[in-house]
Image 1 (cartoon, rainbow, N blue to C red):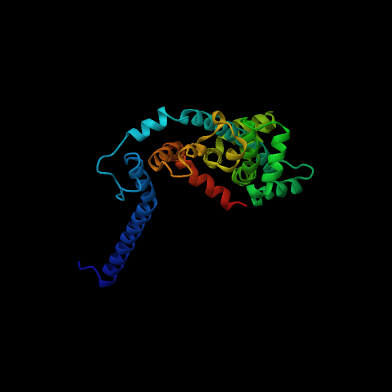
Image 2: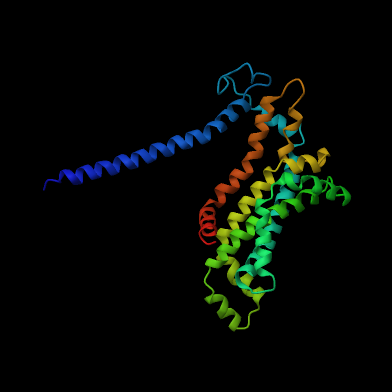
Length: 285
């Protein structure tokens, strides 16, 4: 039986559209990966040749740049500091935001309709607005060159977005299981920990990714509040390679690739939760 010209044309048009989408996706992927290719090629160039060798990859790659940054710099110390700050910040944001978001979603209390907008106002507050008062506050509290100097502001700036996303996700979670547990005699806190939290893993994972990556990459507060080399975090690791009369470009790019790897691994490991958590937080509002 001969297929009609209409069905053939529709099938051809659908195939062309699918092919076009694949081509567009490949072009976008290539565009996104090209800076990483340039960075890797520069990191593999022998020291002092980045400005003279204009090729993407050197003819004789030098892996010694990576060994240099591990053996001749304080990279491991910076990584340790960043791990401590990032882990503590993410844990505090998850704990505080989940409790606050659950309260705003499920409970009725005095000034609820006032406190929630106040929390959300933090989303409109850029770092530079509070930089001067925060600097004086940390100076008076003697927080310079302590982990608290970064953890406290990171938590403060991370809570508004986390509360918004988690509250919207809690709103989408059915209440029947919670009500059944409360009727059986479970406390509100036990119900929250045993029933609600396991159901909100995608949203919690999304918050964890945003907070961890943001804390790991934050530069301005780390530059101002961590003046001792022993307390610096990884965004400051490239500073020793920047000089008045020239930059050690090859070492700098090798360092950038190394410190970029942990956030990438975190995102790849938790990406299956990321989209669903972010979508649920965006739809309900």
